[in-house]
Amino acid sequence: MGITWIPGAERLGGGDIGGEMDTPDEPPRIVWHTTESGAGDAEFDSTADYLIEIGAEPHVLYDPTTDRIGQFGPLDESARALRNDGGDRTNRTGAVCIQVEVLARASEPFTGYWQPGPNFAALLDAARSWGVPDAWPAGDLAADDSDSTSRDSDTWHSEGGHYGHANVPGNDHWDPGAIDRSAILAAGSGDAPYPSTTGTGTADDESDASSGTDAAEVSLAKVVAAAGSDPDAAQGATTHRDDVLVVERALQAEGLLSGDWVDGSFGTRTQYAYAEWQSRCGYEGDDADGVPGRTTLEKLGAEHGFRVGD
Ligand SMILES: [Zn+2]
Image (cartoon, rainbow, N blue to C red; front, side, top):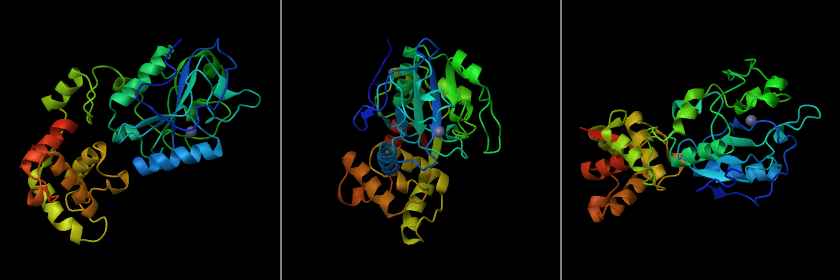
């Protein structure tokens, strides 16, 4: 018996989405999907509601930009995100058929920009607790919607491991796109660096983040310049997009900024969020005006895996 409810996952819906597996003696598997949407808390909430409304719940909803995770039903019962292969109920194949919808688009592989953290590790731990092997038995994923991928029914039934929706017989979707298959497996291991630690990681993770070898560097001068000019510019205008994005993702991970505003523009919403961060750091008045200073930016970086340069 493995993990049925992932520790730390929010419960979504009524918790009752499926039933017993049809072929519990066949090997365990996990299937990756993308929601074909943006990420962030607002998308997370509306997508969860939508999946419940149309009765197409996976087991898990995951935000690759914030490491937020939610779960609709127990892992040892079926979910509803797959189409049947004729009379063959793909949702009910195997000892478990864990389905994960990632808030992302197949055309922009999420492993290119994601921030996997402790919740992603908990998801993979749960899959491994059912004996899902670290393998992709169907091979390649689709790089675009005209890419043909293996959807071999014999492989599906006889081999456990990780599958894309693009690898499931009887289905015609090409999600999750050409994600990095080894990165998925590595991100769940104990020694993966978590770019976005939320303070709940292990001591090992924190030492990775503070060693700084892989950490992004944010220029204080550029962020301050963006905070000075973006609010008065056109909506969404950017001056130092890359640096600002790193700061915005950290503010989002702190729960201070909605994903809708993680756009590389240091606009008014980002200023408000940064001002909140400054007050969390103990500043008030003019010192919490939403324009970053070195002390608060370094503190944010120490918690979210970036260094602060000049
Ligand atoms: Zn799918």
